[in-house]
Image 1 (tube, rainbow, N blue to C red):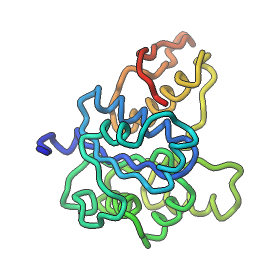
Image 2 (tube, rainbow, N blue to C red; image 1 turned 90 degrees about the horizontal axis):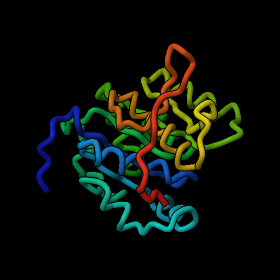
Image 3 (cartoon, one colour; image 1 turned 45 degrees about the vertical axis):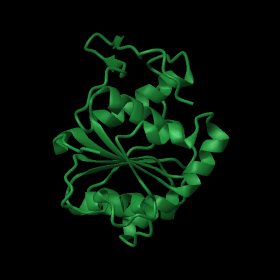
Length: 207
């Protein structure tokens, strides 16, 4: 596979075993449509979660990415800081993955790639999917924020008056992509008059 796009058009996407794998799928779909090269790494528990939450086959999910890396391939390109990217999104991010990233003691390619993103001072966005949170979780999030990560729980927005779950997913992942200055045209934006503007492209199966 030829990997020729500049680093500002290249993102690492991690999918962990937390509930909400649809966020990772939709990110891959939108980034492909936007011409952004994606490098996917998925935990084994994420594959289990797909069986509960989605009708998509794992092979179909992998096919959405430009490059797929095995979770145990610690020699993959994304494990090295010399492989330039504009950052990484973990969607969803489990508490276990978050905790590994915070300590720097990484046991999988997903958490190693996130650690590399931090050490290279690139943007790392963690869509932490857990509630309620105890004090240890909150302290870990604070540690990560102090290290430069962005904690972006997938909290749905209702001011957009979404008609479907897909609308809420699009608004959430669209706002995450805003953090990378990637506008994929799915965010309903608030303007000066208090109106909401935007629409979601139809016709794509997220599940």
